[in-house]
Image (cartoon, rainbow, N blue to C red; front, side, top):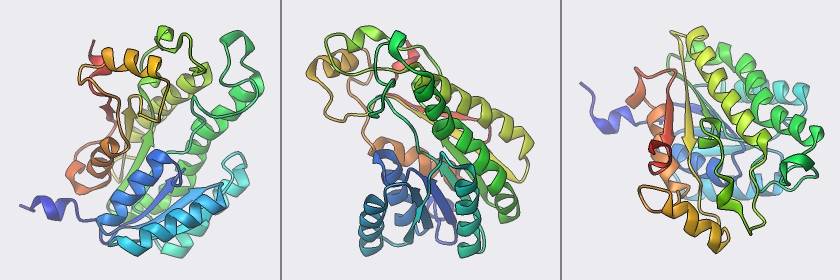
Amino acid sequence: MRTISELTDLSDRKALITGGAGHIGSAIAEALVELGATVAILDQDLGALEKHVNALTQVRTGSALPVLCNLMDEADTRQAIRNVIGEFGRLDIVIHCAAYVGTTSAPGWAVPFHRQSVDSWDTAMRINLTSAFVIAQEAKGALAVSGKGSMIFISSIYGMVGPDMSLYESTLLANPVGYGVSKGGLLQLMRYLATVFAPCVRVNAISPGGVWREQPAEFHKRYVARTPLGRMATEEDVKGAAIFLASDLSAYVTGHNLVVDGGWTAW
């Protein structure tokens, strides 16, 4: 029987993370590299990519490389995945973290429901959900021959439950409908792929609750009061869940949504 350190060892794994220069994506990348993985960090912000990759490769066990990609562009997305597989010679872990979120600045997005636009809805679906479908198609072959193939979608509690809009009253924060719908779609895509990609590839999801990002005091107070563990999440809270699903700790887990919400959805 292997030890816990052996089960969490990622020193021979090749991983790809979309949105890897963002808050949650960068935390997950840090965790994978710390455990020895080589990680391709895919994002559309070249400056943020290079800065993050440089920081990772200087202080961690594994290594990272930047991959510039526009997930709105199907051809660009497919080619980026092929390039990563070609560079690595294999692919063991894929984590889809890129997303339009509540704080994304775009016309017709983080506004009251009656003002939310079809353009913003379509963009959110393309980035949050459709790109995951495209990536799954391109990565399936490499993940299947890996012997350790693991695909992880970062969803949200709002892919599981409806929003409590009273939390947002008298603040500039919003909860666009396209966010929750796209994240719910990711959960169903995960279930579909978990059965279709089995037994060679495991497919799971992580659904974080609200993450502390200097939100307005009114929102923070209301959110904390509604959370059994009495606080919002931090990026660090997602690290353990990601390592569990990426590593051999979860070798017999597929089709699962790991909720990291401090008990928010337990009420």
